[in-house]
Image 1 (tube, rainbow, N blue to C red):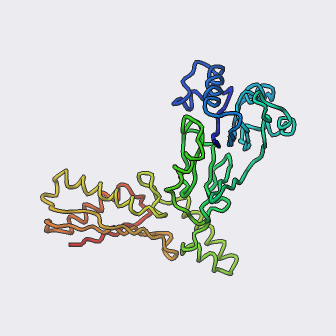
Image 2 (tube, one colour; image 1 turned 90 degrees about the horizontal axis):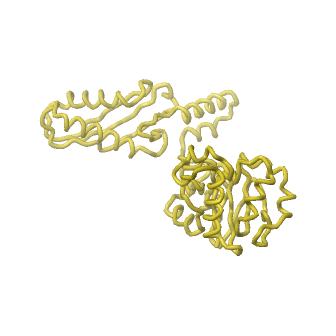
Image 3 (tube, rainbow, N blue to C red; image 1 turned 30 degrees about the vertical axis):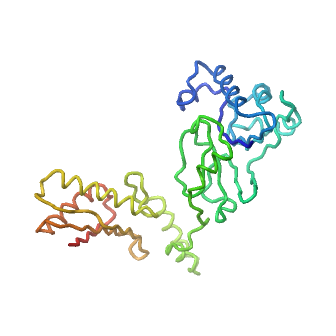
Length: 316
């Protein structure tokens, strides 16, 4: 069997405070023993484990060996930001043997690409926005975030112990990532990126690059949704929440039907200083669409930053 995990943080007493869900222990020594027990209850000496970094917080290599030698299986380590002592003693550690007869570590490296029949998996301690063979359906596995997940879209998964509470099998990884979309490593349909690609003037291109960087890093976020991406349906949900609030308050009188039928969010190159959000609403049973439109605008204005203009279209 093949397993994946990350960020076990042996010897780290404060990790029990930072990520308590699966670390309800009295002290670091108890945590160490329970993690070893959990590992060996699943992994046999014949199994393979890809450990995506931060195996220990101990700076002393001798302490790391005391734990690592007791872990079953063929242990491959992807270097994390706390594995500096392991990286320094890489050759010595790989020459040592564990209690189960396997090498202490089969391999120690910063990055690895695994290839199985019909499947490729990229391993890194850190999550990547673009990875090897991404556009062909490869899976990006990472750690570093502990019990958090990245917002990067596509076939990417945090395998950290603090997120899952266990080592993940290869089947677990496939189950999590199979429904996720295969995405290109660059968006060739984005008009703003095409404008940069097509601009031969270095100074103008520099200006477009700065504008794109600002656009990416200062886009509107409502309820955790980035409206400058492909999340317009999520904003439509927010708009319909506003609709429901207006209807439930009853201040507008009788409204038989009212809903947000569509949203378009546009960051146009010639209007980047004042981009528009277009929201279309359909309604029945209310005679004064101007009053209704004004009420909707006022509620939307409360949740959308002032630097973005709002256009509302009312449809009977």
